[in-house]
Amino acid sequence: LRPVQGTRITCWVGGGERSEFLRQTALLANIWTGLGAATQSVVEPDRHHFNVVDGLADPDHPLTRTLLDE
Image (cartoon, rainbow, N blue to C red; front, side, top):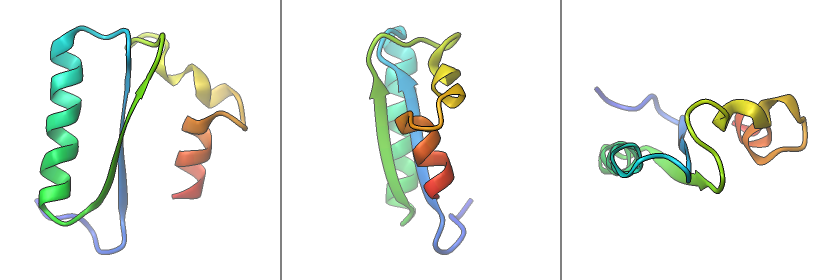
């Protein structure tokens, strides 16, 4: 795979996840960065895989802003 020119990638994970989820997210961000994609990685405190998307309900939440700004 190669990133689409001009595409930015955000890897978002909850800070309350098990260490393996955190490791996989960091690895994914590292791989995309190595392929030349503009990549950022976010670990949101007090979130896990069931509620990490809850921020999308708030138009001012950083997750929503990141999605809409890209």
